[in-house]
Image (tube, rainbow, N blue to C red; front, side, top):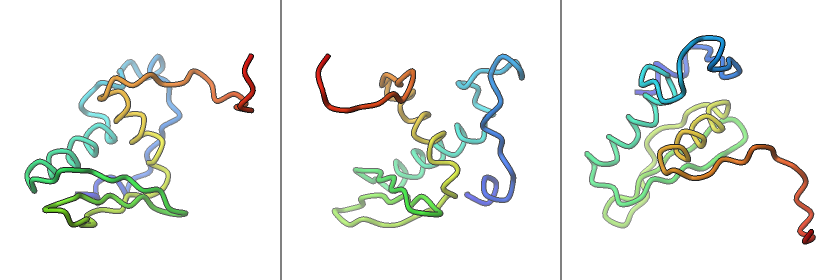
Length: 106
């Protein structure tokens, strides 16, 4: 499943305005990857999907019958696009900028 995504150089810096497609487009590689991960978790009857970042890879594990089973390890460069896609699917709000977070109230 992962060979399609790791062997190619994916440029995530392109803006949607330049290439005429939206992030919701199902032909985007990250969208396909996240959909495959979710479909695989459903088919394996997993109760949880864990996405864990490491120095050079992302570990994806499923909780199946109470046991965490490691499945795939996409490259680290896919972490931000995968998390963004999951946030969009979950209708989380994405931060507009990652400004300083000092903990002080304004």
